[in-house]
Length: 599
Image (cartoon, rainbow, N blue to C red; front, side, top):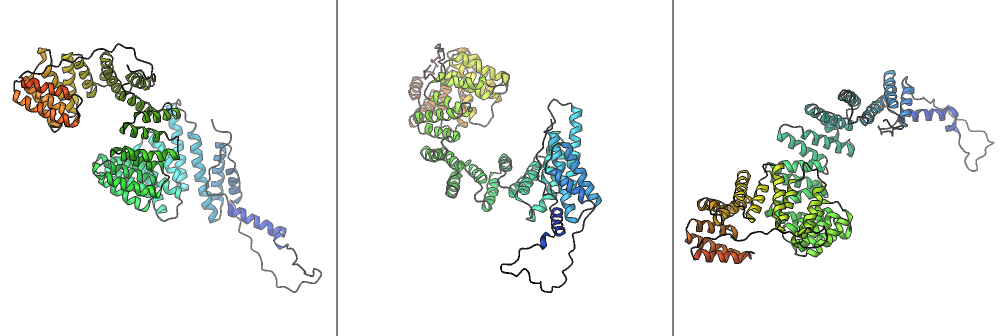
């Protein structure tokens, strides 16, 4: 539906020159300009002194197109329909054809261009999702033609290029979209560089460059467009993010930091740029101090920037300084008590400082403000798990999953739910959830690994081994996460009470690989290596590595230190270790979420 009345779009003014000319002429014809009050004390009866003959007044020249142009200008002030827009265009074109002065021709061209643009915007609103393909394509073709006309009449109308680009992009016409962007950049670039353009045109040129960057086949061309886009508008967050992401993916983080720092020199208060530069610096542990130095200086410059304070809090948290993070977040929440992100960041800082009750309080406040905020619910679940309130933790994750599409729930959430079931000694439920993930994604190695762990906990060794082998097949070859799979499979092959699955030689190979991935610094992995040596009968090596495991475990306060010592004594007696622990099914019904009941 076309609105009954369409708001006018500014187009650089009406025919002000013509209006002023006719107003001035009307004053002349009525004699208004020659009427003046007598001076105070003047004798009005006296004869005026002899004067010179007045200079002849020359009226501005009139043109044949003036009448049409004035009517177009009048209609432009009160547009009622698309038909009115069409009439304005026709009248303005007629005025130019009949003849106008030079200034009015320029204004008329801009009037035509802006009216074409508004016409396309109004008609575009009528394109509905259910419209037939042929009808939709006909409308889009007409709109593209109108935008071409708009650009023809005013090559500096930035919005026309942007809208035309979007229309081509909606039809996946990448090359056509790129051509439009290039034409706009060629016209607008020199105009902006000449310092004649208004700030809005500069911003739109930045956006055109950003859009063209997305169409570039050559990476360097795309990067050049993004850099130029940021130079025209350093607040263009999309360009900043795109450039940073691309350079980081290419391993060119230093180049990104250098570029952003250069931009900051001429835009010292650009918050977006400060944030991105600080985050890039903080992503490198060795440059964390530089990130803090930058943020400290900019917070002095912009003391009321909650975004900068929150970023500095994140850096402090990454630097394992939760008290400093909390101090920044206290300031944020003094300025904005309903800042949900600030509340959640402070909750995380409280968790890092082992102040779980303070964390719960901030999370509860955040959820009072934003009850459906998923990251707050996830954090509440984590806190509940930390306090061994597994029922509450499970119910929170189930609540989130319930609102997701049944055919495609988030695999990461399902894995987290499965882990919580395992932690709550509910292996049957955990296996069911992990199996759901493997059906959704047959290459999700984490799900196979977690399900293998759960099978191992209930001593279903063949299934555990099968899952571990599958996880090894899928997991990245050079990541530390792989060590967990290697370790658990090696442990199963070394310590199983089921003699049919014992395989000391394979266990030793796996144990050595796990140790290499972790630089022989993980007590529980050294313990597994010792078990593998014991299984192949090399008890000297078993004692050597079990002793090292106990040594490291003592230093790191390993929770299973007592078992590590027991394993060492077993090897000293030349006895392989057998895994005796078995998970028992927790049959207590899950408590309702938020009950605080430990299940």
